[in-house]
Length: 455
Figure 1 (cartoon, rainbow, N blue to C red):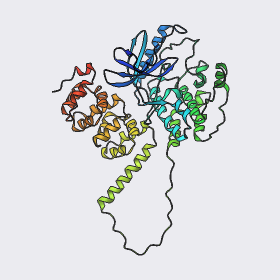
Figure 2: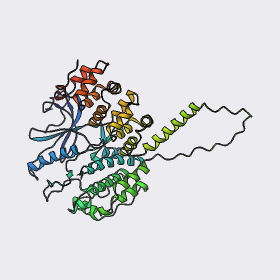
Figure 3: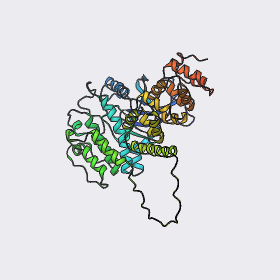
Figure 4: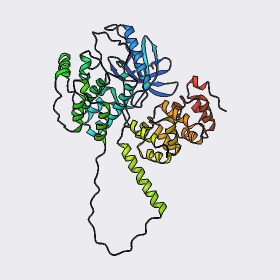
């Protein structure tokens, strides 16, 4: 296995397409590389699943790699790493995934102490991704800080579904082998009982404890002692007691039937993540010379002030919610798209993008029609490529859609247009006036480009 090549050294090219840059991580399931997709001109995360002749059979290991790809492909959520491709080369399976610039939560915990609000906000993103996975009948089974990527702009992505279980399918692991990180495993996994979504919530609870207290609650000097601690030991008393520790205690109940559920967990995390209320300062009355009472603002101006205040209040209320809940709320407001778009515009771009990723394509399109193209493009920058393509397709070949494409960077426009129906892409490129049509077309994959003809 070749590691990072020295500066000026030979370039390692996989599938005659992916140029390996640096090693992002290595674990029991393989190695993850940062790679350049030369065909599409974008950075990707490329996972090489290393097959070993020890322990499980080669075919079981190969089948697990395929199952990881299938697990990811079943889930469509901004907090779940999107999969682009899976193939085999050099005797090893490779999985091509979205690359998120940032580091792991494990690294973040080592660098500094996180506040309860930070942990709760991050935890809601992971919970939303897990909820989407569970809805697709996928149990992750290895939730831990090292498998949570925190992007530079606050984007949170759950990665490494290498030992995920698709409910209803037979397992691939022999009975003598237990895969995963023991200190984060739920007791029912260790005991060999049926495993469901509650096991992932246990692992999320251990993750919260690590982020809050700075150490792993059940880690011991050896594997046997760690297993015993998970199954029998009480949760250590808190050094930072508070509402988040109470959440952890609710998640780390040994009996999965008594464990806190996802809905209650999201409600509590939302309360912790919400910004503290600030009481308005009390002003003492000051003596003023007699003066005439100012005239009230004209009716139109007064109405405008009330509308702006209402939009800010609505945006503040949504900002404390999970992205999925924000998306549902915005969808419900599309009967008044101008107001809904005004609320969306007041959210930070990253949060707005994650919320739009949960909306229906038609609902999101209705809001983006109301916004300046530059603002719409900045919001779509945080929306998965396929979802953004669905929204662009819902906009149709309209001036709003054309302006949106023109406001995107060349790289981002190519990423999105790759998944837009070719006839719509062709019409949009013909309608653009920024001189980039040929460049955008040239950057699309050959299969898509072959279906598009522009003048």
